[in-house]
Image (cartoon, rainbow, N blue to C red; front, side, top):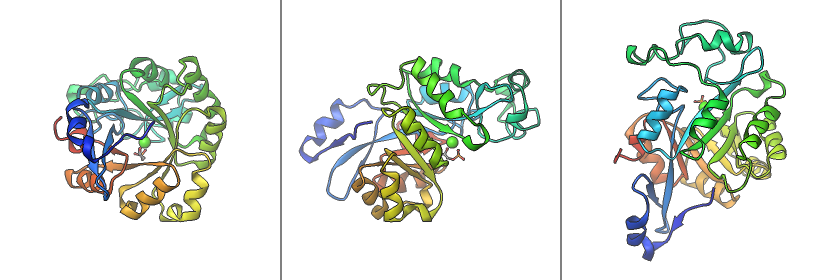
Amino acid sequence: MTKKALIGAGMALAFMVQPIQQSYATDSIGEIRQVDNVAHRGAAGYAPENTMAAFDKAMEMKADYIEIDVQRSKDGELVVIHDHTVDRTTDGTGYIKDLTFDQIRELDAGSFKGEEFKGEKVPTFEEVLDTYHGKIGILIELKSPELYPGMEEQVAEELKERKLDQPQNEKTILQSFNFESMKKMDELLPKVPIGVLTSSKLDTTPEALKEFAQYADYFNPSYSLVTEDLVDQVHAEGMQISSWTVRSPETAEFLLKMNVDAIISDYPDYVDPRH
Ligand code: G3P
Ligand code: CA
């Protein structure tokens, strides 16, 4: 993704010509910057997380990206679900890695959020790519890839098949808490932006940031780690910063003030109150 900084004098014009769904922050030297609005697990505040209903809601709310969590069934299907088990978000039980795709697909992944979502299914990675690429950005988290050997190659294949590994497809981003996995993804798909996720302060040292910048384009910390100084350091290393998980208007306001590049929220309207 290119950085979209708009400077002082062009400010008024920029507001007139930019699509209205974009959110902005003003940094300490008076630059106006677009902030990407990322719908966490889809618009998870309003619809069952990681389902087509949540991704449709994110589109309807004009988010810039959906964030999805990818794991793998016992028989090798990449599926979109957050927890290691199906227990919390479906009417079934068991680990994703121990269930076949047919067993996972039978489950109701909507009712936990409300009766009106009954019948939502756990989506496949393929169907999310096919349904949404080109319509909204996709921030793809490899969830615990250490549990799924060879997952990186499998994800890379799916992106290549759809030509989402090409530089013009800058609205596809990969991220993970597993740094080795992201190094591997950078080797497999050198043109796809890579993000590292962390909630550990140990990963915010100058040395750590320098190391991440060797292969990552995004440093994506939990919001409790974010300071103006950290944002400046990440930018100085040539990376962008996306922070998570916003579940209150105050947190969105804090991150806009901190001048991050993207905000990952269950509630896209907290990041951009116009929606
Ligand atoms: O995109 C950031 C966020 O998704 C990381 O945490 O646990 O919600 O996957 P988690
Ligand atoms: Ca995630």
